Image (cartoon, rainbow, N blue to C red; front, side, top):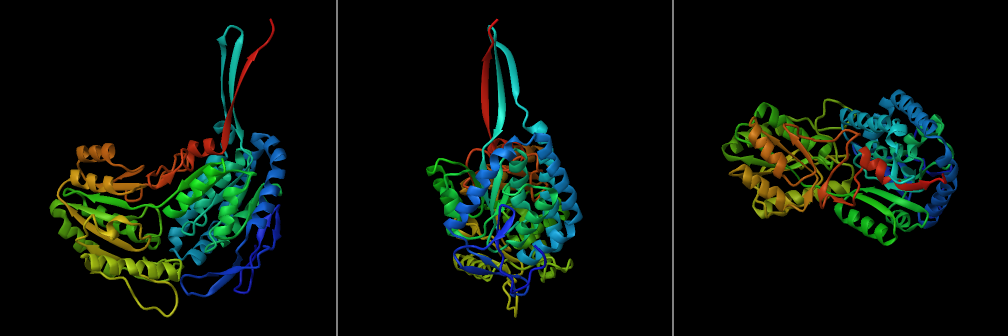
Length: 485
């Protein structure tokens, strides 16, 4: 990819070659810390997607016939290159997304874990066999790749989320078309560069930039067998429905409204920094961020006071400075939308404990905002804000906290802070969310486990990563055999 300047127009990557988009429409990629242009990205259309899909489809038979150990060795080479370029990937991520450099390093590390998992594909793809299922008859089950598959990924984790799917799909024998967020395309091009250097054959991995037209074209294209999507709930519903109508496999990871319960017996020295980091790191732009704190009983006042003190003492600034705890949101549009939610919360009757709105000459900054005395019926308690805003609700019991979580349409992640094992067990068993933390504020699964959102946070049957990811990108073939005696 080389160094990117404000004047550079990015290109699609199809069949291992840079290809200009046919539409001629472009969008500026902005540095969230300064508002200055980093590059321009093409807004590709259906013709560009068609070209990428056909190239991926044509490359698939030879790649599927490549022995599984050879495909695994590609992952080992990618792992080595990835670690050599670790800091570069983290810096690119921070420059285009805005998040803190330590957050970017954590993201890059999480992406590496999926590459390491996919390197075990010779084991992960193993089938089963049973002889003598009937007299003289044996049965075998094989896992086979689908063909050309695609992923549509979001702006908030431009390194990690593409890697939820790329290594698993390719190591399993599929070819791949990636449509990264048009807001953060630079990380994906760096990943493509590393894949090429690792020896990925032309056409096995392709990148098409764009927005709505490119998304719809991937959902509709007859040669794309499966689509993995991560993004907002409305778009997830759209992608799920459109792919299902087209008869293709789809997983759509959607929005979230994550609650953290703080019990009266909680260790606040653990709970306060945990809740604060969960709510405000990455500028609150992550699907596992805690956007609602449920304070149980008489812990509420002290919890609110200590959170407010931490917020007022937090340094706001560019992500490349590790001293800055709060970094910019990714776009000016996001900053305005989040500011509107803060105003809405006040209008609904919430008490503005800390106001993070600020005037800046450049960059898209918002400090941490805390709304207290929030009620469950308020929109700020129900809707995904996706920014550095924490709503505090006061509840009387664990039972009321569980009811509050159950009423929300989303079910991505949740957590509880407590010293009581019985309360923790009750919470674990009863809570209606797919990823649960016990004294862990961001319960992100490791790569060998599924990213298991529930309810309106996920549309599909097989989740991303882990064995769900392997199953999503393969299909089973059952062979029943009888030989003449």
